[in-house]
View 1 (tube, rainbow, N blue to C red):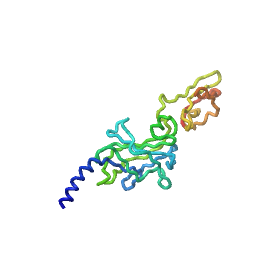
View 2: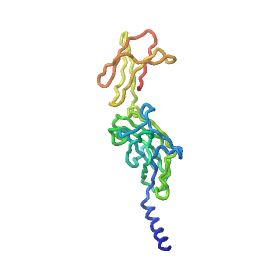
View 3: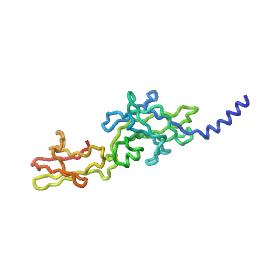
View 4: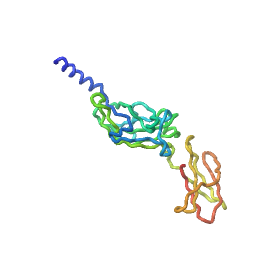
Length: 237
């Protein structure tokens, strides 16, 4: 018995040194109230398959710019679990029992990381809310669940980071109205569209109905001027 106790006492410090914090990267754990699907840009389609990636990012403080990748990117599930990931243990380089901030991010191929998707100004990417999680050892306790995690949807980097934002320029040229707006820099994005309406309220906005010309990254369209009110707006489809 004394030998067993001695071995146990020697093993405990070794485990303490080797152990790191672990979390359970499962986004559908109904017993814990976690139901966090990720959807595409239409807000409806659930992500699934090998062309869509997701990964956890962690921070010791939750401060903006302090998050770093944890684990490796993985694909979303298919079938009945589309939009979710499950059964993945992610190691955080902290002592078990340490509280950290966690965020889920997702993006599309051909980018290897979320940062590449953002910097490339193409593809689609998105990120969820940040949650505080107390890590566990994964040895004496199971990996910590992501309680409080919420679902999100992908978007285009151009929408998140355009600075300055796009402007619709309107000028008068005789009996015509000249409209000018920027071309989208993203090969996968549908691009900006101009709509027109005779009033702000009570009337549906509709397409401009004119094929614009493209010169040096700038669209230009000319429409006849009207004696009645004419309103124009730039819209992301």
